[in-house]
Length: 197
Ligand code: HEC
Image 1 (spheres, protein in one colour):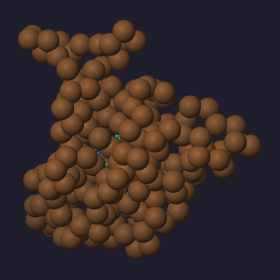
Image 2 (cartoon, protein in one colour):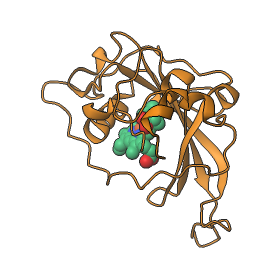
Image 3 (spheres, protein in one colour):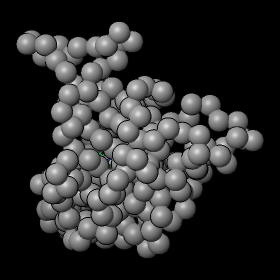
Image 4 (cartoon, protein in one colour):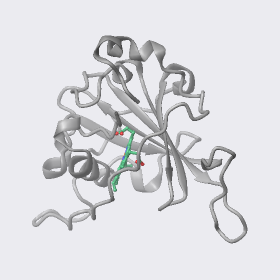
C-alpha cells in the first residue's frame, strides 16, 4: 500500500471494515522467521509475561476495525487477516502508535487438497477455511514491562479462540514468545508492528 503524505491522515476513514476480506491489499512476504532465543539465564521457564489479560477481546472488531492487509503463509498453511482500530489504522508506516492502538490478526487454516497441497482461488490467493485463532495486541502507557528483556515497547499480547476463550499457549502468562518475536523481527523502528508499506 502506498500512502502519500497528504492522504495519510484520513487513512482510517478510507480503509474498509475488517470484515470486508476480499483482497484489497496484499502485503509482501514477511521477513524470514528468526529462531526465538533460548530461555534467558536466571529466568525459569515459562519466560516472563504479564499474568493478567489487559488487552481484552475486541468486541465487534469485524465491523469497527479497519482491514489493513492479508497475508498468505505457505510455511504454516495459513491466511492471516490483519485489522486495526481507528487509532492504529491512521498511523503511517514507521511512525509510533498512540496509546489505545489495538491490532487483531485473524488466523485461518488455508484450504488444502487431500494431499495437503494448498488450493488457490482464481487470483492465485489462498482460500480461507476455518478461523482458528484471533491474536490481539494493545498499546497502553506502561504496558509490556512484565516481559522484562523480551519487552517490545508498550504492547501487551494475547491469543483467543474464535469463541473468545484463551488459546492455551497464548493465554495470560504465556505470551512471552509474542513480545519476543515482535521485538526482534518487527523492531523498534516500526514500533514492533509488522505493518507493511
Ligand atoms: C515467530 C514470530 C512471531 C510470533 C511468535 C508472534 N508473532 Fe505476531 N506477527 C508476526 C509477523 C511476521 C506478523 C505479520 C503478519 C505475517 O506476516 O504473518 C505478525 C503480526 C501480528 C499482528 C498484526 C499486527 C502487527 O503487529 O503486524 C498481531 C495482532 C500479532 N502479530 C499478535 C501476536 C500475538 C498475540 C502473538 C502471541 C500469541 C504473536 N503475534 C506471536 C510474527 C510473530
